[in-house]
Image 1 (cartoon, rainbow, N blue to C red):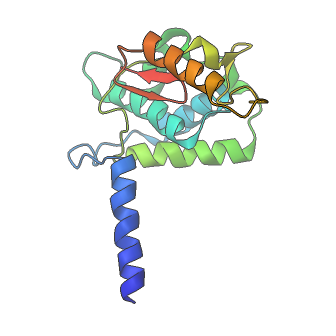
Image 2 (image 1 turned 180 degrees about the vertical axis):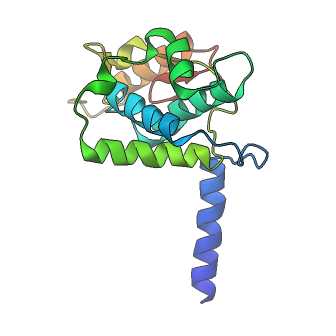
Length: 173
């Protein structure tokens, strides 16, 4: 029993470190129509990003909804981000797995998680953009050294130095 309690405590500490929760914002929710639109927009525009990046992207939209400087709906906040979202993409067929993963990410944000620390904008590094869509994959390392990965990391950190947080080559500011 003690082992279970210790494991549960360790999980809570780690999950809080990854997704810091702001208790003041935990009560803020968006309406169900906005939630569904946000899920579809993120899933259609960013189908290949990690769960952490999905949470951060959804957090940016929710932060905009909460801010008096931006529209107070998810759709308005997404439109105010300009070309960061594929507006036509939300109408295309999205796999159920991607929709479920994105729904979990949005629900994580609505529960109070914000890995961006309150950011209201984001930008994708050109290295992660492939054919107009984002890809979190790096090139194969056939020489089994870290040279290419270090170059990519240096390039991303240098060009996105103004960003508060960088996840999967997406900078949040």
